[in-house]
Structures are given as structure tokens and as C-alpha cells.
Image (cartoon, rainbow, N blue to C red; front, side, top):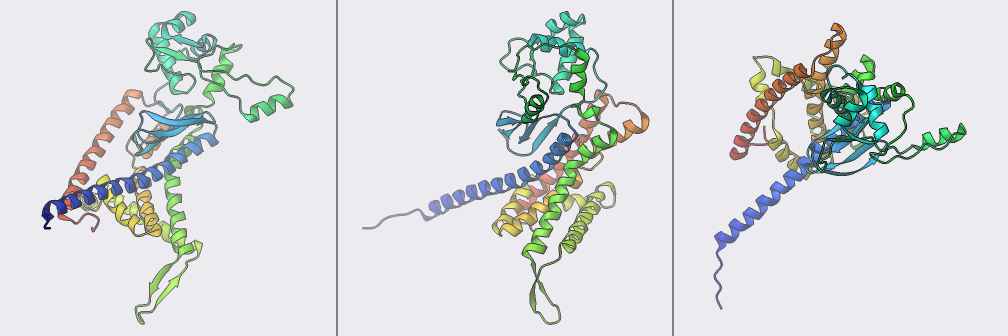
Amino acid sequence: MAMYVDVGCASNKLLARTFRMDVLIMIACASVTIGLLVFIHEGGHYLAARAFGVRVTEFMLGFPGPSIGFTKWGTRFGITAVPLGGYARVCGMDPGPIKPHLPEALAALYRRGTANMEDIAADCGISDDEAYEALEQLTLWGSCSGPGKQDQYNTYRAPAVVPTRKERRAAAEAGLPEPPTLALGEARPVADAQALYDSEYRQQYRSLPFWKRCVILAAGVAMNLLFVVLVFIFIYSVVGVDLQYQDTGEIVHFNATVWQSVVVSFSYIGMVVEAIAGLFNPQTVADTVANSTSIVGIAVMSKDFFAQGVVSAFSFMAMISTSLGIMNLLPIPPLDGGRLVVEVFQKLTGKLISERALGNMTIVGMGLFLLLFAVMLNQDIQRLIAGTLGVF
């Protein structure tokens, strides 16, 4: 019995399935790489902020949007619908001066539990616009919960309060009643509006001295570079490397000391700094961009490095972590380096940069990065078509 098989059709289907599988693997490897490194970066901001007593309302893996997670220590931890990138929402980083009427607006909201701007305006004897501005800033501070999608009106709510073990223990040791647990939107008495406001203000980024704000901004980059140093120690000191003598051809396994690994890691970081600095030199900017890659290149290369084993995967992540950290130091808002420049400018001049000015600078900065991304994406697509992506 004879059977006809369309070999060409079957081969095409096999190639299509293989291609789809390769794409899925590339996406998975890139997501793991970028997700881990952004988690490390934002973790630096989170740890530094919490160490200085600043409130962090969200720590998310992924772009802002619908999310799943849990709340612990006053922070909602979770993953969003697009798990690429991440952010830590540090309270009090909103630009510009503090809005007026915050103490009385905060106290009025807490006494009501749930209110809209008209309620707060009536209670405080201020205009609706002033009440709205105050409530919006308090929302950014994490001092209240803003309107939800299901709210028919712009409804604001007093936050939920769950006493910590430390607070319960302190109350018990002082012979005081246990601090109450309050639900979201539950009314609560306010004896001193200014004291309530002061306690909230002390938990804001803007309440910190200059040097602490700079530490929070630089902590993300520091964590990325610390990860690089640890990877180099793991590869060169723990795993070791094979070296070949040029005169004899003999191959020996060598485990460097921790100090030697640290020196090598800083030498590599220095090379990346020098390369990225080429973006500011008209004579080298073209070569720097040509030797850079977009998310497409990272996805292709991550698959290749991950296929070579754990050591190779960590080596690749260290390379990306270095670039991520150093790029974030560029003096362009909204990057950490841009925020550091803003902090230094405000410290030297004694003037606050307005929300509008910072917004304009952010738009310009984002425009530059989108242009750079478009150029690198185009060259990565051309390399992918030519079959040279990952080779350069």
C-alpha cells in the first residue's frame, strides 16, 4: 500500500513550530533577565527608602496596570499584566511645592473616612479646586486612597491600618490599649490635625535631607553594580576559569581570589562607563550606537547565553546589569541620574523645580530615548534578517 506525503509542507510546518518555540524561549529568557535586573534595581530604591523611614506603597514587577499580589509592611508587592520591567512607588517624590491646606484636608478625610472633594472643601472652608489638589497630593503620599474605577464620584478614603508587632509590643510594654485595626474608608478620631500631618510628612521622600534623597536615587544603580561584582566573584572565584599558557598550550583551571574578582569586575564596569560616555562624543556616538542593542537583541542573545549553561547566563545578566545601571546614571529625566541632577540643582539654588518644568524635561528625555531605541531596534532587525544578530 503506497502513501503520499507532502514532504515540503511537513517541513514548513516543522520549521514554523520550531520558529515559534524559539521565539517563546527568547521571550522567556529576556523576561527572566530584564525582570530580575529591574527587580534588583527597584529593590535598591525600596530598601534605601524603607531604611530611611519613607513609605513605599507599591513594589511591582512589570509595567503599571492590572496586577496580582499581596500587601506587607504597608507595601503592595506583586506582578502586573505585562511582567517586563518594574517599579517601586516611593511616596513624596512628586515635584513642586507642597499644596496648601494639607493638614486640615487630611484630618477632615480621616474624620469622615470616605469623602469627595466637595465634602472636604465644605469641612475646611476652601474651594473645590484647593480640596482636589490637597487630596491628590495626599494620595501620592500614600496618606489616603484615591478614587477607584468603580466609584461613581471622585471618592477618597482613609487608608487601612494594621498595627505591626512592634507597635503592639510597644503599647503592651507601656500599659496602653492595643492600637486598633482600621478598614479602608473607616472613620477615625483626630485629636491634633497638625500632629497627624507631621507624622505623614515624616514618611515622605521630600522630608529627607539632601544626602538621604541622593542615596535613595543612587541605590538602584548601586544594587545593579553589586550584582555584577557578586557574579564576577561567583564565576572567577567560586566556579573558576580555564586558562591556556601561550608558550606550552597547557590548560589549567584557575580560581581567582575574591579581591582579584572584584578588581576584574570594576575594570569591566569602567569599560562600560567609557563606552556609554561615547554617546556624548560626536566622534564616537555612531560607533557606540552601532555596538549597542535593543530589547530584540537582548532577547536573541539571552537565549544563546542561557543555552550554554548557568555560568554563561549569569555572565550575560551581569553584562546587561552593568549597562542598565550605568545608563540610569545619565543626567536625563526621568532616569535616576536626571533626578540626581535635579536634586543637586535645587540644593545649590535653593529653588524647587516646578512640576511643569520637570514634566517638560521628562518629555524631552523620553523623546531622546525613544529615538535611540528606534535606531537600535532598526539595526537589530537588519542584523536579524542578515543572521548576524548576537555575533557582533
